[in-house]
Image (cartoon, rainbow, N blue to C red; front, side, top):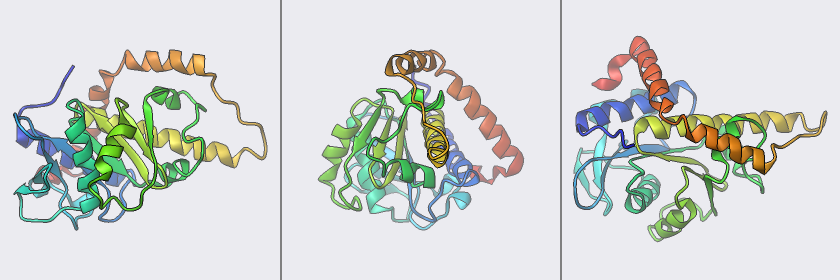
Length: 246
């Protein structure tokens, strides 16, 4: 089911809330990394993204700029991060269902994407990504628009992407979906990083593929709960600092 609101105002507030929540969780990388959400309407995709130069914890709904897949700023006076545009436009061009795209450079995420085997089935959380996680080879900073086609191929129909030696990416039909996917992908990476620290004390046991597939199916059956959790996150943010709506 597509939960995407029709109002640009609502989308702006939701995306700004995602930035503020990400800052609370320590996901930011100063003024780098980026979240985007596609705006409704026919024709070539247009999407909201953060203007270059703002920290996550200061982004407001009115700060977000509208960009098309050709790189034109359609609304807003500020410039954007070129690497961010390359990555986000690639996904928005290829996936009609990927209304929201989130990209992070977290410590745990960047540690796991540096590992040859990537994300392992070490815990219940990681099984949500069993056969639903793509991998993209590192090509340097994403300034080359020709890389978009390769990002699209690497992502395929998956819900998330491991950008090797770079970071994490999640996609969703709404801000709520993409945020929850990123939350649990990053949490799975944090658990893997913690588990690796214990490897010298005790062997690490992975969940068998057959069981991981079963649990992944269970998670698919309750994906509607992502919006319930998102509403709870937003209520928390509203109690702490509702200025993201400005």
